[in-house]
Length: 199
Image 1 (cartoon, rainbow, N blue to C red):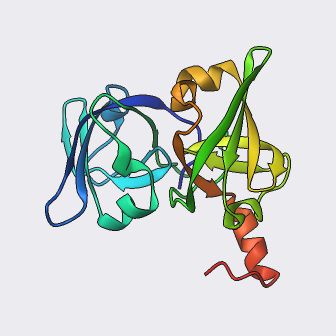
Image 2: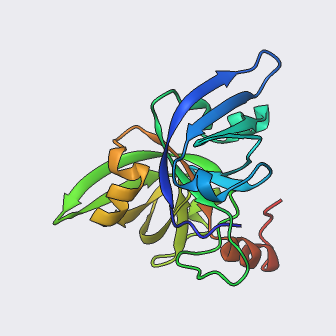
Image 3: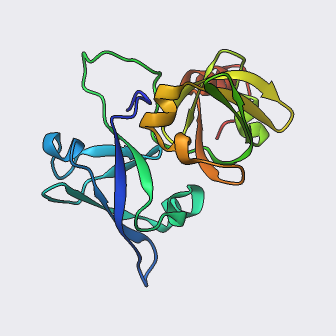
């Protein structure tokens, strides 16, 4: 479980596809690597992965074929920045919202405009996401806890403050980029209770 508050911008050192399927990912994370161990869960662009190897500031992960299929991680390459967050500990302050690290859908940035010193992002998403969103509710984009400002036909909008742009990958994103989306967990449970089939 995560909060959607990015702790570090890591950098991809190695991304190798495996012949048998899946991939091996190695990330340089000088800050997070100090406080983690093999077996820990880390959110990488909103995807919960397990640390398989730790060498100095480098963390390595094995990705399954399923992970590559349902997330945007398969598009990573050496030098790319990624959002990193260690899993929550009981009793820690929750600054964002409950984020499971299980991606619901890969969305696409279809608009980005500046409003003052903030940026407004329009994200294309399917109904399995938008039906669970409300204005002023929560959504995770690449593992970042954000507030929905508008729910649109076929998508939604969020506003990014300068701090978020500086501390996360959204500062580098442009129109056409793909992002991992996770709807608010509470919304999913409510939908299930009122009879909507969430699987």
